[in-house]
Amino acid sequence: MRLLATLALVVVAFSGSVAAGTPRVYPGVNLLLASYTEVLAGKRIGVITHRAGADAEGWPTNLRLATDPRLNVVAFFAPEHGLAGDLPAGAYVPAQAGKIPTYSLYSSLRRPSAEMLAGIDAFVFDLQDVGMRAYTYISTMAYAMQAAAAADKLFVVLDRPNPLGGERVDGPVLDPAFESFIGIYPIPVVHGMTIGELAQFFNREFGIGARLVVIPMFGWQASMQWEDTGLPWFRPSPNIPSPTAAQLHAATGLMEGTNLWVGVGTSIPFEVVLARWIQGYLLADRLNERELPGVTFEPYAVDRGGKRYSGVRLVLTDARRFQPATTAVHILDAIQRLHPGTLEFRAKSGTRYMFDLVWGTDEVRKGLLRGDPAAVIVARWAEEVRRFGETRRQYLLYPRSTQ
Image 1: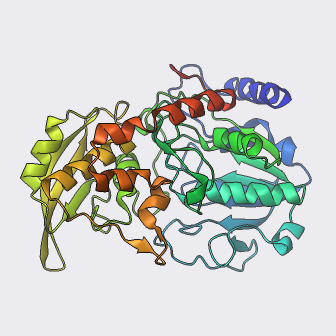
Image 2: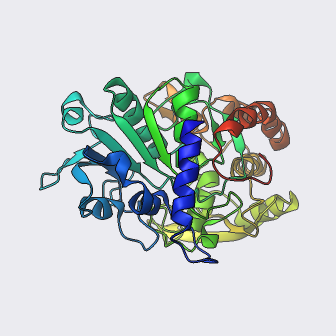
């Protein structure tokens, strides 16, 4: 209750400095600098961020904090894709020397070491998440929170918009048997929470126990899509170049670990589902017959490495109604029925399937291989999503039309 009261005071103080009727969202970094720097007064600060962590005007958070005379930033910490956000998925992120050194949280270490912790008193975390569980930034946050809790360091999260909004929840809740760095806690594939809300959820529900402060946004509503915020978009990773890519990544990104290609490396990553053996026109017709909410399908083909790939392109018609995980199951089911025996799942290290790690369960893969209808597979996660919704309600910082 004390934290929520403090946050309310911060929002009130900030709102007094914003012109009435300004139709913009201000991320947590703006509120921190306008009204709340005292929480970091006299502390040596380590900033976990990247280029997509930026203020309302687009200035990078690391520069805004490092050049503010009221703050003492002594280190940067880079997640997957690096401080600039331009390294490919899975690439080693090197440390960098400098007046303010940059430590890597995506190398042989995935969490701050004792040596790193010794030089700071507080973390400030500002990463742009994509709203999907299978993305390493929320795992980086959880690991850093664990390290901060163990060393009794303050952990400050600067909240920012979820590009999928805050009202859609979709997909199975992670089974702990499939825990990995791309999914460490039992939440659904699409969780409908901001990074700050997730921090509070993780801190209490999973026993992290960090000294946590979340600086909220000003002006954000959970029904907003990115285009409603007035904020510039900076890609959080190389293949999320637009808000549309973030929306569709939450569906087609779930096909990692199969023999399908989703356009990574092209100008439309995650907007397509392709293979050399797919009949695109037929697949588009079969999927459009299902009348999935918020999306339609167009035949699509492209040459890749001298070979022709065909399939479908996803076209968002209503992002607020689009259900990414449900859509992914329907696409995979339609492919299975149109081209029996051609969809393959590739094992990771000969033991666990990457597909299962991304989904957080083996039930989707097994259901597809059994020939279960898509509606049956989707129905299996309804009850666990309902229970998640009940738990998450107490951690929500912004109004929802449905909690």
